[in-house]
Length: 599
Image (cartoon, rainbow, N blue to C red; front, side):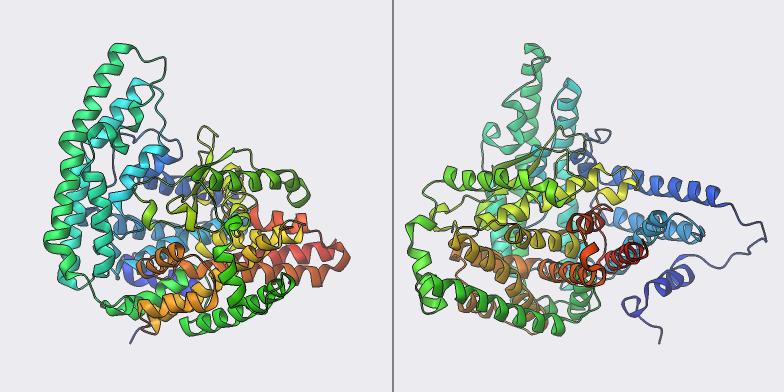
């Protein structure tokens, strides 16, 4: 029996794919080895070709980074395009394997490895048919299409005309994903039934709005002064017509499909192991999310250990505040009116104030700072009930759209203010906004690396940033410091409950009970987060695993370099190459340590 892709080392993966997935062997003519300059040029040209193909076939992403060439298009979700995309990927793997990277610049070799890794992951993921389960309460075209509007800029008549053309294509998107979901029904690849009921609520919320009140009509709220009144009238009529006759009917048909056929076939077990090849799929998702070679059982144990460590620190704070145990302190925290917002505005302002307070400290910690602005905004009301407490949405590289920290103000009175400081550093600065904006602004790496996302790196850095705030003197309020630990234990709990439900057959109630037993996280977040882990297997593992790896590498550097260690230099090594798998990051840090010792 031949080995599976997931068990092979990376270089063997490349060879295996080249030998078995791609083409029959072809005679190779002996020829002179191209020069370093020629091979570098060929590699850069191939990177650019792959990048341009990705933009063309992911028009929403292209629009989100300010590339307007495909603003009248939407992604093709058809099975034909799934197969065509995989074929393009196999071709690119073959082309990359034909370029010898020996002697090329170190960053070019890293880029080559990262691109191969990504393309190979796509080929391996295909056997799990992820396209047959395209929607849940957290992700899917049904919400992404509405959220796309806020990522677009409307400056010219053409911007509006492209948008109208895009709206008319929404029925096709729903038709394609409905077909894919029907295939999933046949293959037994179904999300949990109760999560699909949430999808129906989200869909109906958008399907039943009046055209003028729909988020799809947002561009009509304010026209640029350069657009004439006549054009404004014409474009407004056309947008509202498309919303009324294309968009809303598509949502209504999708709602009928959900309620009439799909939801009833939803699976009853919450864990992904319930679907065909579920255990293998979860193992793949664990590796993809953590970029580490660890089993679900190993990660589960790490989670248990981290929960215990956090609880020890939390108990010390509780005792300083006059409480004998965590249970009594947590109960008091939940009923303390000072630790809960009295309005949505107060909650938003709290995040803004912490981000503003961090800004002056950044030059002490980083040699490179982002140019992109940042703003704090509320989560859209049509998704707020089932969304996370906060999330980040990157801006455009040219700064025309700022990076945005979205704050969930739903049920604000039951949300805690204690963890706001930690989340502000995580989602804003020095977390996501700083790291992602710097990556987008880099000039010495290919375009694809400026937007690459590895959960363990990106989320690990953001969680590391929460702790960094403590190290530089923030969290002066003991309740905020407790909130920092509460945020940290939250990520440790994820290791336990995500692996619990998807690899150990935990029930949903077991997940909720573990949250209650080991945290004072508010009920709104516990319920939404539990459903998030069920809907998105493995994703939540990357946060804590990434943070622990970055801390391990920092300690290694401090031990090796002693008084020569500079925190600012370490941070620049970690974030000045864009997002990286943790094994690649480790090599970069080790190389930097060796260089520093030699100097």
